[in-house]
Image 1: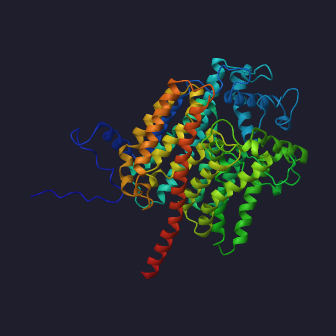
Image 2 (image 1 turned 180 degrees about the horizontal axis):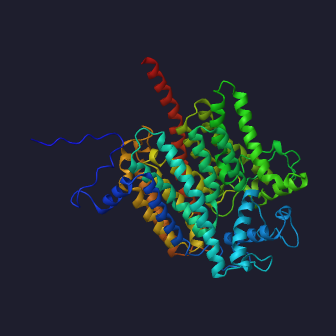
Image 3 (image 1 turned 60 degrees about the vertical axis):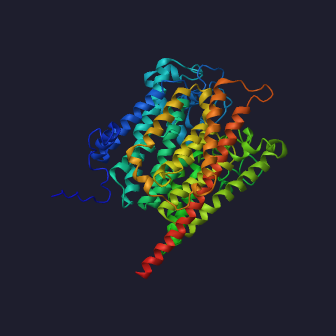
Length: 558
């Protein structure tokens, strides 16, 4: 008599242990063990592995290592610790004998300065000479570098990792068919984000802190806590650079309430349109929408007042800080970034044809127009899934069209895509590849080629782990670029060209007449993919409205 097959419940596809090596590989067995132990064990094991990877990357050089007189981002972060631990709060942004603003002057909001102060205190305890006023410039002792690396590692472990767990738990709580394997895979995608690891632990920055605050705010939206959302997101805005673009031509702004932060905001402000449109859409559906909006406004104002308090006692002090947050003098772009302005500058010399003031207005209009479809969809039909797509679309719009974008700004849209990794099986791994490739010249300058190649390979293996197998069966949208004739050929051609550019960049010297030819080709290739990806995700977000409408009609018929 044949044995009955055990009943397989929804979400239990990863519970049954794999059978011997004849039917499963060692990686399947390891993955089964990891997920079978539960979410907590999965998170702890993946976190330890992620910390190990971060520690290995931190052993490589950093931005500006051994290159005086100004070194690089590592020295900028160390210098801010020097300034904040030796000068009064009110002098952190003021030019003076002990604070030469032309030498890595503090140009990020107050929350970044407070973070620098906390880390600076730790360095002052264990290695005082590394933050000694004036005499510590260019300090690169072994202990100083070790302590600096540990501040980033501890920030990741204590701040970013818990936020990632919070998001994953909330996100999968709202999904009806999330298996343990999918949860573990999603945790791995977030914690082993190769772009974030290479920038924070290789190049050297503290993006993990602002991303943690943003991730916490996103999880709060999914929980339905709007006040907590705006509190956390306001903190995120106060941590990474918040540049103010104004209609006025004057540099000292007389009325900050009329300032616009859409076209030139950096980092967490990339997500502002998505938060605004989603929560506005939800507020408009409340019994008392005005009261709901007032509550959110109070949360935002209260958070900003607390963070900015030392500089609110004087209008001059407040405007002094604001003036430090606007790098308009750098121009609409720097280096070779895979965005619209830098890519099209090959044909259109934006900096020569337009003044900085004109470019501010043009980039503002372009950013708003690119963000508008996503915003309108969320105002008309707010949903959690639509909100996540809105984050991706607004951050990509900022990356492509806003003023003064850096290569590292790709972290913003890539974080959003990571949160939607289960919904983007056909495109997420491609976005990962081109996001990394867009930073390839920067990482080569920092001598991070080996971590770049290793993390790319490692992330690809983990992406194709057993946890991703169920994902391939369900897609967010019936629309796919694969349905278009020639798309697969185009994608393969793109990939082949990128491999050739990798080899050429590492092996040949460009012509003297065009010293940045290879950087320009890399930029064009990545930009073309980002544009295609942006069209796809905007279209997918709008199809969600149709999906919810059709679901509503079916319920009515029932």
